Amino acid sequence: MKVLINITLFCAKQGLALRGHDEKSSTVSNTGNFKELCTLFALNDKEFSDFFNRKINYTSWIIQNSILEVCSNMTLNTIISEIKDCGMYFIMCDEARFYKKEQLSICIRYIIPNSYSVCEQFIGFYDVSNGRGAEHISIEIFSVLKKFGISDIPLVAQTYDGANVMSESTSGVQT
Image 1: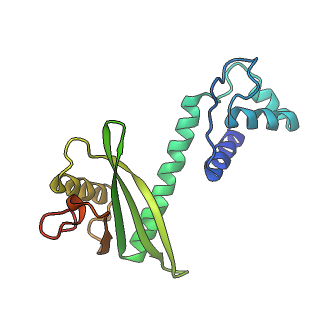
Image 2 (image 1 turned 120 degrees about the vertical axis):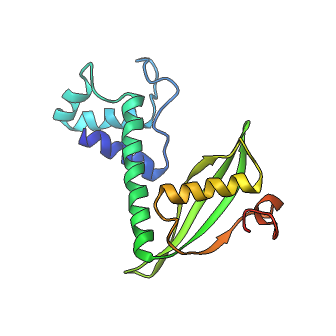
């Protein structure tokens, strides 16, 4: 399992897709980055080769997604811990239409206390398709901040795109 986790982390760090077009067929020349890296590791490591060539080898897309979810949660927990240590943060939000959905992206900027370096982190996409008005978007932002336990930490700055719903001075999300 350790090798599978390391392969998943490597692909994530490099921004590589894990899965290929057809992972099941033995006639396909490329089964995707994850399975191809598993095959490469199996060539050089007898113990992993025995594991990988079993009928149940824990390389399914379900296991890949589970590993990614655990890594994502650990990363978010680290970010939230750093924000709490800093004692203040800056939020950046923008909306994007994706097919028939409206998504809100939220990034947070803060200073890492020991190194005094500025850190800017993406913390997620959030569905705001049910209401595209300033009030609904504001509620979603507050909900996310509360979910991560940082709603009581001073928010020292905020930026939004130029759309009226976001930055209108009397009724936008900024207000």
